[in-house]
Length: 457
Figure 1 (cartoon, rainbow, N blue to C red):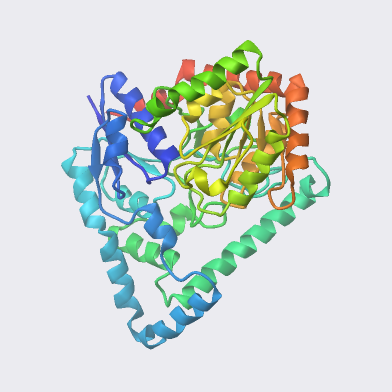
Figure 2 (figure 1 turned 120 degrees about the vertical axis):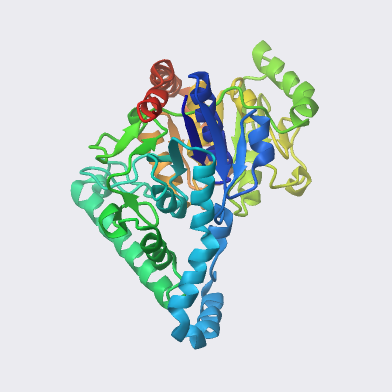
């Protein structure tokens, strides 16, 4: 019997994937532990899985580190200017803060046979490599690499669509992206006096003996790099991606979703009666459509104004019902008064509502995309200019699973037009159901489990 240690960031979608992978591993007779530098014990316990806190900064700390905004960057630069002579010592202290020895010790103390590390935690990949056990990097995102005909994941480009989707347009997009990435790296090196992420990763790699220069490829889409020989488990379907030649170490294993995951404690019971009434209205034909809207629990942007726009759009159709889930980020009272067919909740059980919805409005986060497909629900997506959301939205359009709006310019009439388009064309529903069948084939074959079992003793 082998032991798999799954290291994850604190993002809800990643925690859910980790717990589902652990469940599958344990169902095959092995043991699995969920580990994180973030305190996610309660969430892991809700899934009935084992949890271990490990060393290192969590994603929120890492993402929030360093100055933000031009005045703050300048002020931080001036404050650190006298420290230029102690760059190496401070960089070593940064690595000390990562505590690679503590993480390596945890991996060994847990008698780990296989280490799975979230793509978002490069320090743990590097330190984990030094443990002497097989390491697999995993991600829920689609294609993270450059390939012929494949635009950067953060781009709205659709291959073959307009000049931007031409071979020249895609190459230009990659050139612009790589220039941005290089400028970002150089700016951080200067403003942080050697305490930037790449410099710290190099120092960490030197300390543990990781071959960073030959193993890491900084020219691909992920920040800071993609790995050249460490296997990459892509927890998504290649059929949802654009057609392309995958990265040599990448293995698409289908979306790893947990249909049994529990809602937030107590809140589902509070809402169940009201939601059941809405489901019954839709089932009986009293309402002609149930629209679900949520923009996730991770992004902290101010989207209240746009949620009001969505509410105003659906309010104009008294024969529809709208359920808005606010991801625990916003008090429904902050949205103001709505028409009687608009129902806003601080938190809504997304999986349950999607089972009854006719269309979903969301931010094109990959978890919401996959959960909509599994529920057979076409989409109207309004991505933030954030991580992989623009690229996910482009793929939704490419595969005919929904339409994309512009949150910066769309008004209520535009939202209503998009909803009418998706609800009025049965082709969207049909294509979503076809993709759902593709997902079901992954579930039946379970390539994720087979991939992991092949690497266990």
